[in-house]
Length: 245
Ligand code: NAD
Image (tube, rainbow, N blue to C red):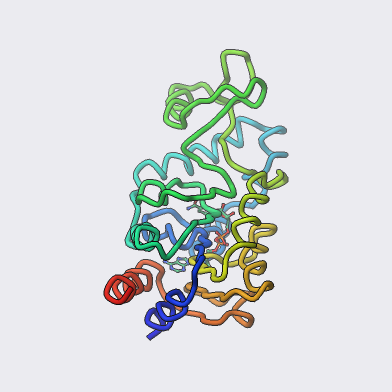
């Protein structure tokens, strides 16, 4: 019933956007942060901070390389594929994601704003030279930790670490300001400033649909809350939209 109601709301929107979080990728084998099996139940949040990278680059990479390695075996799931389908159908205009796994792009979504960067890329923190993550993982695997650039600088992932500015926010805010409906998928909606994006859409009169396995602090202001697995709900949603659009 939930997916059918979401289809009704999306059908009446002219500029719908999607806002996704780690929950859309758990079915691809990438753990979220705050769900029941979340990463922060095992590690302290500070491990993914700019301070930790500066103070102890070797320790940072010991933690981060394992995380980075896990994305190379992950493939898009039905949730990512469904959002790409909704874009092809002209229903979703932009996907704004907090995820750094690059799976929306691999699923075929074309208009993606990666708020927190992309773990498949790295760069030198001193000269900015780009490195692929697989190259960096090879360096670490062969005993070079921290991985160093030819200029001597420490190589870092191309992601927004805790304590850093979210440089893509203005672009995401502009997409939210021109949107009349936001479909939130798999986010605890507790990470700021990213969680201001769905709020902005709601604030100027747009509709808010939330698909998440757990309750979120935004459920009370949402037009529709669907408690369930993203990969199931979005699959059903596409079926409704494709048949009747
Ligand atoms: P979060 O971990 O705070 O919340 C994820 C939410 O998704 C939880 O409420 C959980 O109940 C729900 N969930 C888990 N599996 C689900 C499923 N199959 N279907 C529906 N809901 C499901 O994640 P967040 O809100 O994205 O914020 C965490 C931050 O973590 C982001 O900044 C992001 O950059 C980063 N992160 C990214 C990845 C990734 O790239 N895949 C993974 C972990 C964390």
